[in-house]
Length: 263
Image (cartoon, rainbow, N blue to C red; front, side, top):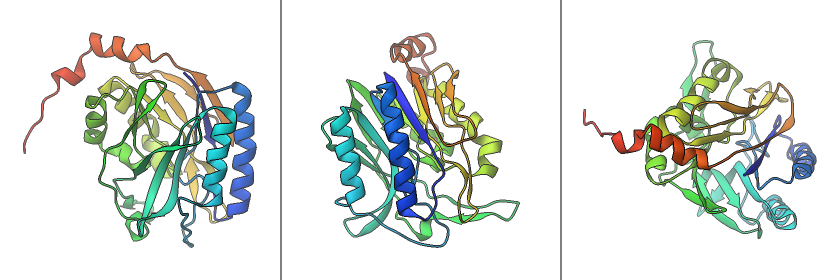
């Protein structure tokens, strides 16, 4: 499977974000990927303002038309979406016919107070999701997560046991937490479940001085980093062999050996 991961800096200026994203999407098509992945909050990220999209928004129509025109799958990493009257941090998977085939609402809200004084309260803006979502791409099962979900291994174990061969982690990991934990967490989730982890991340400091870590990555079931983005807005291209999942899980059968513990 050929992949293109889009890494960019997103702020509160919707028009600017869309223009940058369109340019990067057009660049990614040159690689002829099967799947393009966008990061979390790929069109709007602000600490001060709120903006919610509807599922019928023109921006989402653009994504659907782009996927159909180019015969690709497109993961819209996440958008702030009002769905059935509730605000979600929602990821969309669009198939090569331009149809939204799955929606995943971020489960774990990023409510943290860091020792350097940084604080985030995602639950002030979003409703937490409850459902585990698995999609199908070219006959392969893809589990959905978003950013802060990465710190909760039970979610990834459940998705792997449900048959996911790939788990996606579109993110806007902060510079502070990303520098300390990003590589370790992404590789750990791949190794402990024997799956590919595809992790497109935002990079850079936006107009409101919100800094994200970048280093978008693709990691194989052995924990090898197949591809990693640099410190810039860019498209990260690579190709993966999904047969590696079965080979790894047969050689180190962590899923069948797994036990649940009550405490």
